[in-house]
View 1: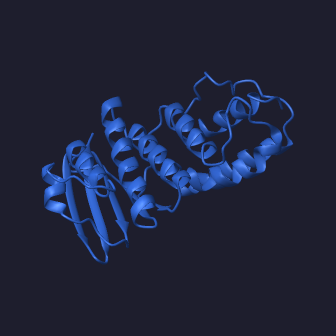
View 2: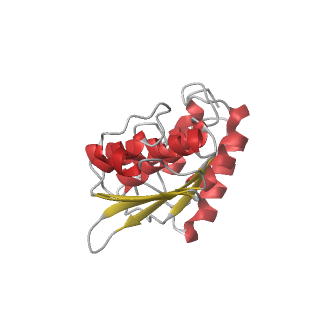
Length: 229
């Protein structure tokens, strides 16, 4: 299995279970925290990539199909050549099938975790049919919240909640147990100037969101926002 061809095979398998766009973003979001590149990915890295891919796909694949996905991914370990029909640009027969999306929570402790949450948010938005600018808003807002958690609160959680009715939207909840955001009202009004930058990302999230709520105090901060799709 050649380098580059390895990622093509992974994409081919993923596209049997989700759209091509979602497959590409899920693979990229899995490789980035592992500091691997799709262009140079080789057989030696497959075991840890497959181990990371399985949980990364959980909100895109119906539980009844997950054993099949797991079996197909693990079968790649014994594959020496790229099978026909699994090329990087060829869409799968089921690529247009509806994506089963479920609420998913990500633990954020490091910059790699923050990147994973950002990529997962964008992938989920696109899988739900979001347009480019909508998915960019989601990804940017999640990135701001996750980086604030890492920088100022020692980490936290990011929960992605797809909603289909009464209107389609992606809801995000971010929680941490840090010391809270000082001068929250001034931060949200745009008049606060922090020497550390703490909390300033919150204003950006508010401006990007269609609905926004924040609670903060000595026990931590909870932010919930929605982007309508």
